[in-house]
Every structure is written in structure tokens, then in C-alpha cells.
Length: 396
Length: 57
Image (cartoon, rainbow over all chains, first blue to last red; front, side, top):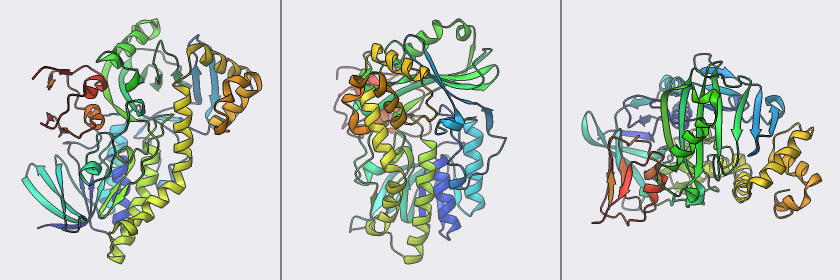
């Protein structure tokens, strides 16, 4: 039977970064991707910040940069706009990418580092030692069904992750921690080319937001995410998106050339992300930012830590959960505080009515706030409407 | 039990990640529902395109 030090399940960005750093550190790595093509179909809004790219060793490449924006624009339910430029925005969104090309570039990096990639290879179950340690996977592929042995299996299998649950890690999250999302890639429109736009309010996106991310002067990703706990009828996400577009002549005249749908985790961090012979990374580990819904940056940052931990585990010959805790401690140290704080901010935000959102964005639009952080925003709002912030002062 | 409208399904996995009892599986292009489904209906609600419906057994 074939044996690898590390089997990575899922060849999205976080999977490829994990595989790359494990392989660079000397591990034998197999990446399994259930789809026939890396990066397609796209399941993403495609807006990323730039500030974390160097940290994980990604080289900017104009092949996957679709469009650059100056900053972000928040639009209140009554239409008031609050703009903030990227250089001051904590750089949450600055570059709109082509995810299919981006994912392929990262997979190429992983393969060049020595990882092996197999497509159309769906993992159907994990295998275990008698001790309970995960020691491999069962794969269905063009070659038929087979088993692969591994020192450690990494579940980088996205929102729908099953690797964790098969391995005894509880990744189930509550309806108010799940976003139902749908997006149209629209052409023949004139989006604001300088801003990534976010529309708040119960009319457009209860418990979430509508986004317009320009991909060029004449095209954009237009999408909506609503909390599962706010869904009344099946298919609500699509109805909300259609209603938003219907109400805007500059979008209504556009044409849709791609439909993207999916679930987004917006939960607090999980209690555990490692077991003996098993790690979870990215959306699978619920490392997605619960406020912005951005998952690529955190997945890649955690993936690098996972890959480095795994290459050390190979050298030590130790894939126990106590060794793999180096990964868990590493990603928590880097990401957990922000994840938890932004999850609390999301919890507060979903309870606000449109009137309160109008007041908050109106305060921000009149302020000279120069940093788009939860802390600065709340501080600014407290000056004018202390009662709005009183119950969330623990965030400050 | 859950009925899948294969002409609507986007294979996005929103249902699979939402299922509280891990009763669904999505490979590259086919969605399956297993017998341990508890008829909670969360997958029907989370589906962004209304491809799932709950029907009586």
C-alpha cells in the first residue's frame, strides 16, 4: 500500500500552502482534490487584502489580479455611504482576484515544492490504528477505490468539511454561525471601480451584507450572504440578491456570466483542531473571519503553520496530537484573538435594526476615522451615541 | 426525507457543512443523503438556490 508522511485533503489555497510548506520541510506529501480541476468552479467573492501575502510566501502575480480598489465603502440601509481608503482600512479588501487562476498558481507552487497532486480523487473515509490514531484515507478516483497510508491527514476540505467529523472533531456550527451565500458575476455594468462596496440592512441582507466587488470597469461580483437563522423560505439568498439588483438600474441592465453559491462559517473558533494523526485547516477549521467572511488569508496563514509543524513531525517521527498541538497553539496565537473579537462584533451586529445601522454609518461618514477596525469604529460611535455601544463595551 | 433537485443543485456543499449529523456527502458532482438524516430541514433552508425539499417518508 502507498504511504506518505502527509495526506492533504482539498487543493484550495489553504491546502496548497499546507502541502507546500510540509514538502519544503522534507515531508512526502499527497494532495487529494475531489474536483477534476483546481480552482473551478469558483466559490468565493474574490476580494482579498494584500497585507498577509508576504507572510505566507505568495508572490503577487498579475495573472490572478483582476482589479485593484482604493478602499471599502459601507452603505447604510438609508443609503448613507462611509468610505475608507485601503491604506487606512486595515487593508481588509484591496485586490479583487481571479480565484481559479490564484488556486492553480498556489497548487503549482506546492507541486514544485515536491507535493504530489491527484485530481478527481474524493476521500470517502478515514482509516485508523487500533489506538484511534488516524493513519490514512480511502479514496475514490479514476483509478478506482484505494487506500493510502499517512503519518497525518490534513482536512482542508472547506465549509462542507467532513474529515474533522469523521476523525472525532466536532465542527458542527449553529444556524446563526452559518451564512447562506450566492453571487453573480455581472458584466455590462458600471460598478464604482475604486471601492469594494458593502450594503447593510434587513431589506437587503438580514444578518449579513450585499457586496459589489468590481472585477473591471464594466464587471463585478455582486453577491449576498444571509444568516441561516434569518432564512424564512428555501432559496431566500437568491431572492434577496435578485431584489437588490432589481432595485438598481445600473445593475439591472447587466448580464450574469457566472453563478456562485456556498456556505460560509461565521462561528467562534473551534475548541480543537487536532487529533492523533489529524489536523484541520481553513474553512474546515472554521478559521474564516466571521465579520468580513474572508477565508483565504486566515486559511493560508494557518496552512503555513500546519505545513511547518508537519515537516517537524516527520523529522521527529511523531504525529500524536500532543506534537501537533504546535500547529494549534501557533494558529491560535496568530489568529484567535481577532477571530473571537470579530465573532462577538458579528453577534452584536446581527441584533441591530436598520435605524441603529443608519445612525452608526452616519456617525462614521461624518468622522475622520482613518482605521477600519472594530475598535476604532465603536470608539467613534460611542462619542455620539453612547447608548448604542453600552452593551458592547466589553469589546472596547 | 430530503429530495434533491439535481437540475438546481450547484454542488456547493452549503447543505453538507450545515448538516448537524453528517448525513450528506458531496463528491465532485453528486450529492447523497444517508439514512441517518433526522429531517431537521436545515439543509433545505441553507441551500441558496432551493434545490432541496423535505418530503414525507
